[in-house]
Length: 535
Image (cartoon, rainbow, N blue to C red; front, side, top):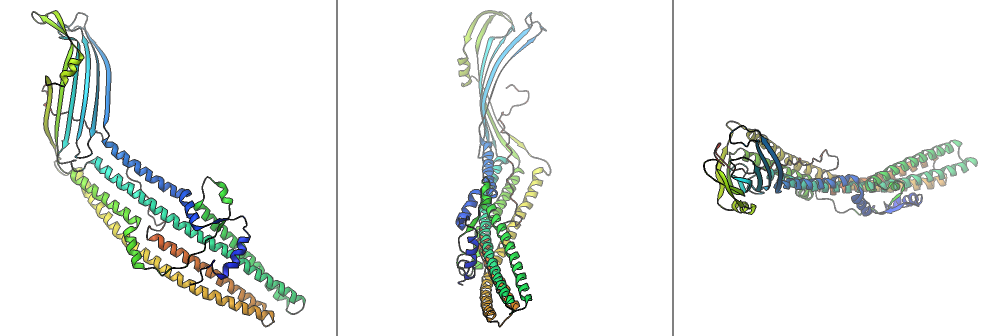
């Protein structure tokens, strides 16, 4: 197959003619066009940004395990009228300043939560029965809550993180898929422009042949060798060929704009006015494709199959999570609190409420130290159990998730069938277009031979203008057919390479972003205490 050289011998002069009309054209190789598309194509940039969005969702899901710091500081005053014998004559006046700080965190394993907090307060009062004025208190608290059944193997936070990671992987695969489709589109547009420019040259060459025939006919009509009707026929053919050139140039302009659309920088408006000269020639055809090997490769590496496999794993994760939610909610709750007391202690003697006979000062440091000791401690350890009686929301959700898991598995089976069919069809297209090029090449050679023979016969007066014109038309059609079949072969080759990695563009596969991340509240363990019991 030696028909692949500068778009074949028939197009050498035609291409040179077309390029001579574009002296300001920018030489462009196929690799340069592909690189421009990778750097500037806005559609590809949007898909690339989707990967960043999904990466942010992964970070969002991890924020469920970020320790939450909280702090409170306040002051209040409460004055009540004297409503009993133990109140001061001016009423009861209580002033309180308090603060608390703490950290709460959900653990990334086991589903447990813990918290640690410290609080302090200073209270003054004019109550005659108060033993401290001011009253300084300090306390520390440690709490832990651990699920035993539900939420231990998987909970909502871990499910969101696992799914978000797979969605991020899917976005990377989708970017690879778009990259393959964009590169294939650029190659298609590049070879289409190459063929369109060559077609302009072929049409221009055909116009020149018609003009030469009309010139010769005019000389012969003037010499009385042929009737004037032959000149009319030649001039009509010139007009038709001129129209063909105009249409070919318009088609080449459209092809050039399609290539510009794929590779231009949207910020460079002047690029629309830049003429492109695709200087690469189509590569020599390799051996015919092995459809079975190509199908095996596609089934192992196609991006849409990999994304479908991730979707199936997400469905399995949902089944595991919802199955876990059907278990009883059994939790171990533990809490420890240490308390400390300080301030100015009022020493009293006599009967209640007694007479203040002295004071004893305890600093806040004493109260803080007591909080870490065992003098005033509170603790609790216990188990809570909750379980719905009857069919729960989790039961219904699990049934739905199991159906969705089956659907995801069936989608993979369908995709595998579609992939095999698409790749085999693409392989047949490469083979058939290669055979068509051979046939078109032979036809173009025969048409040129017939035209040369007819032209020689015309030169010696052995044929008519009609037959020469018909030979010119047949040559033109054969050359255009060869250009089209060569373009079809290049398109089939590009498509065959692309469908082994990604589905064809525009097959209805819509990019679906991952689910929004919902940040669950981190509960702070509060311990277990009997209602009404002293704490």
